[in-house]
Image 1 (cartoon, rainbow, N blue to C red):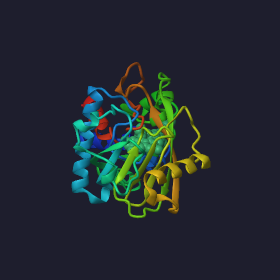
Image 2: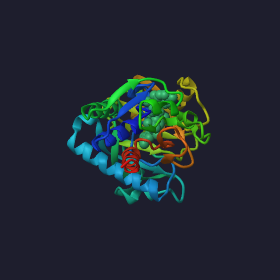
Image 3: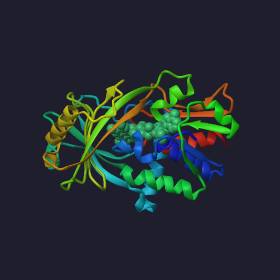
Image 4: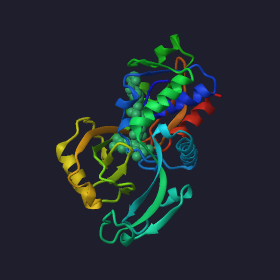
Amino acid sequence: MIGAGVIGLSIAHELAVAGRDVTVLADADPLETTSAVAGAVWFPYAAERSATVDAMLAVTLERFLAIAADHPAAGIDLRSGVIVERSPEPDRSWTAWVDATEVDASELPVFRLPDGATGLRTTVPLATMSLYLPWLRERCVGLGVRFERRAIDDVDALARAFDVAVVAAGVRSGSLLGDDASVVPIRGQVVRVENPGVTEFVIDDEDPAGLTYVLPRRDCLVLGGTHELGATSLEPDPATEAAILERCARLVPAVAGQRIVSRGVGLRPGRERLRVEEVPGRALRTIAAYGHGGSGMTLSWGTAERVAALLA
Ligand SMILES: Cc1cc2nc3c(=O)[nH]c(=O)nc-3n(C[C@H](O)[C@H](O)[C@H](O)COP(=O)(O)OP(=O)(O)OC[C@H]3O[C@@H](n4cnc5c(N)ncnc54)[C@H](O)[C@@H]3O)c2cc1C
């Protein structure tokens, strides 16, 4: 297993549950990955949509509902919140899996919706990744999964020690396999502030000034964001941060002036199609599991089940 982000950990978990002997090789620990930067709300965004992928959305939702109910320490909460709608025909396909009701500005005292916009109120799982990723790692360890901090530059060379390689290396997966130039980084920047008491999330991905969201995690408010196709800098940009703070304060006035706790930048693994399949012609059996774009958390358990099925 190459990768200790949300995809690698979820797959490692499923394979270990299926009785496989699993070693996770990764050059960054879970809390240093793109996955740790994610908001992280269950919501399809910037990733393939198809019948196959939609089935993964549903599987993942079910799993998060069960984790939220059975494992409070995992950091998964069911959060109510609002998806802002500005366009005349917004994409509501996600309401196939969760209830949603239309609300207007008068029903949202905490939020200040843009003129003419309405909202859909819904309840979905939201992960405090600083808790969830370590929790998931520990679950894996409990199932016998081994972790090695190690950079891999040749997947085929793993044939000397392993029967199967699963490549869940996020944005670097294509170059690691060497046969796929179609993975494009989609840079995302967030700033985390102290929470003044906001309990609901709000997402406005149709803001012409930029993707805007306020997500209450257990330990802070995550304010975002950006969607920068092809950008690769992992340094937080101060001007971008100022713009995020300004947009978020316009949407949720209570966040203005809150103390900044930390900052984050991640490179979403953008790809037109999600790649979860066997890779032919390798020195050992190799499964690709990457290309989740802005939906890695949202598709994680569905991806893991699919990889486990491929290897059954
Ligand atoms: C700002 C932001 C907000 C987001 N919000 C959400 C959200 O609300 N909901 C949602 O579902 N998704 C969200 N996402 C998207 C989500 O974070 C990604 O889809 C997800 O993190 C991808 O997970 P991954 O495990 O594939 O990759 P990563 O988390 O990047 O993990 C890759 C792993 O592979 C390892 N690796 C890579 N190359 C090598 C190598 N050569 N050798 C050894 N190890 C290697 C790394 O060390 C790491 O452990 C967001 C992303 C960003 C940036």
